[in-house]
Length: 87
Image 1 (cartoon, rainbow, N blue to C red):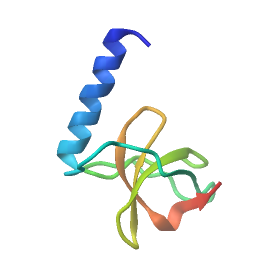
Image 2: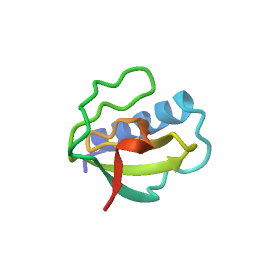
Image 3: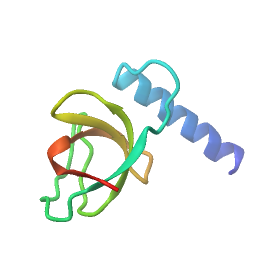
Image 4: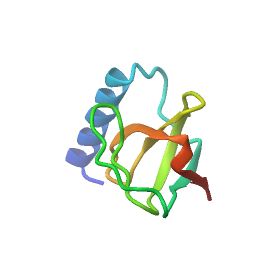
């Protein structure tokens, strides 16, 4: 990883922490898959866009309805628990 890529990732992580009021280090708890039968959603605001069958990193189990996740493009957002499947 180059220095430029490393700085870009650090900046994205800081923006995530500010936007979601997340304190502490960002660590992946587990990985889960978006249900292949779920409808794809665009996302927006604090919601992560959903793609069928996509593997997401779980950052935080926020409440009974949503999970805070990161996708393969290092974007962060909330995902409904109803569309998530354990690996």
